[in-house]
Length: 76
Length: 403
Image (tube, rainbow over all chains, first blue to last red; front, side):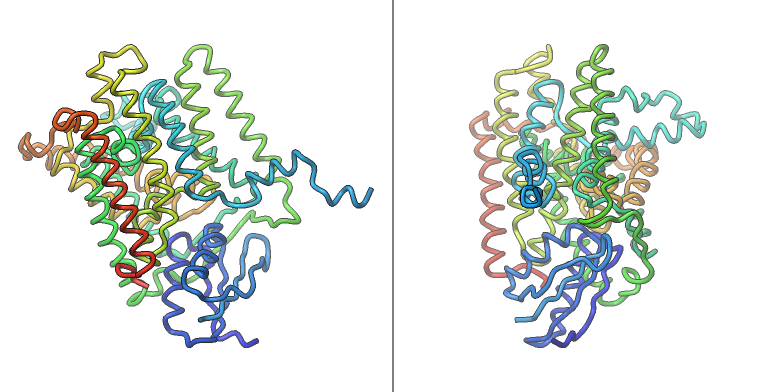
């Protein structure tokens, strides 16, 4: 799987991570995979909900190091 | 033996129910609504900006500024303590779920936090209230001024959201750059957070117990603050989110959660006011609780400025407080901006603007005086229902969403 781009949202709090994510997705093509890295616990509930609503696919969700989350999302 | 270890015990399961995952926002809304009703029954409804203002006055008092020597000490001020313990409650919630970490964002975000906090302070002192006092409590208190304040909040939120999107497009550097995270733990390490969480919770309860002998109401406010902070952190209860997200990603869960809380509070507050329940005041004093001199222009301007501030900061009054407890340093800056500017605004900005306003633009409007209790109750319920239909329709159609 090829990761098209990485979005670094470390240190940012609501609403910046979700805003940046939504903007980044506008610039992707269908099938592209984006990697997002962040530290706001809010993202853990906001991001899956957003994927469900928009139809983009959440491929992977995990923690790269203590307190730093990583998500892989594929554009619909 | 090894197999038994894998099965979590009953108590562990109970713990996980509360601290393994975030709660739905509506659970937060409903439980906060119930605690708010109890606060009113015991004394008076939930509020936040007044408490933060008291912190500011005490900071100025501490550094020896003459004007503030009469400020009431934070330790005995009900609302200052409620806010302070709410931060501790959020700290407990974050620790028990291992979500606490010092999260330091890029410099631009810190500046935005401070400016947002300062704007919230000006809005709160000018408009007499914040997202709690003049919205989450004020609207169910059947105050006409609170409804106008809320309209101002909405307009401010939309304008500031447009700004944030513009800033992200034109000046992406403001929200990017070097950031730091300290003290974070993960699922498999960092048991210290859980232990510290219990210690802080027990310390707050001991404080409430000690205070209870001389000041029962303060003890109740301390316990409520602990629970409210914990509930807010676990459900990520945020009024900016409720107002903003329909216009951002179109998501409506945050809004519906707040509405659930409003409806519960509306039922409780209407009963308390109608029957004059609680604290030895006259019926009229009970009715006029949380109805402020803000109808209509005063509330509208204040709400608008507050809406701008909370959206730029990324946290309303309570959203800022619980994120302070979670370790979001941007919101530390927002709280700092709020507490420094609030007493100054009250002293210098508010009189300059409010004194030139005619009385007809800043009076106490109690809705039942005009349309009766049934009318006021139904009006507020109808407004909540219209808001509900709007966010749900918008979620499906994306008509008003930016993305």
